[in-house]
Length: 153
Image 1 (cartoon, rainbow, N blue to C red):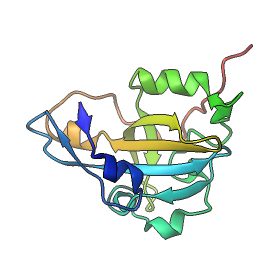
Image 2 (cartoon, helix red, strand yellow):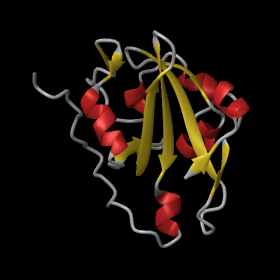
Image 3 (cartoon, rainbow, N blue to C red):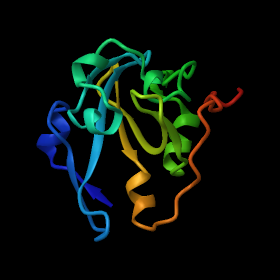
Image 4 (tube, one colour):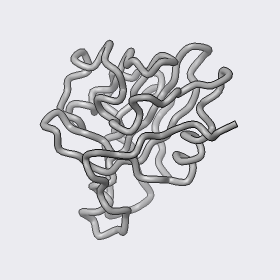
């Protein structure tokens, strides 16, 4: 389980150092992205520089699919709620593909939730740290991912 202070969660520009109860992992960088309902990045934490290779101001106004290529056509919000399929995949700890500035892909874990009435907060954690510490994780996805779609009605 990871724990972040309330102050860190309220300030997406703060560097997110998150403690973990898994001794081998120690501290990890957790990227916090604040998006509008259409997936456009409004703000992001300083950790995006270490994890993705971008400074926060470089991502403002860009679509989240630049970092998470599985989300280009995904409706993040449906009927004022997080897309049920996306929420389910996040809840089941499905590895999502993430892409660094240099084009290198890596596996990540996403946590997604509504933030107010017109924003979405996405927490991105790289699974590479877990892999390098000998923990088993899903294989890295290829750089041409399947897109996330809503469940058919």
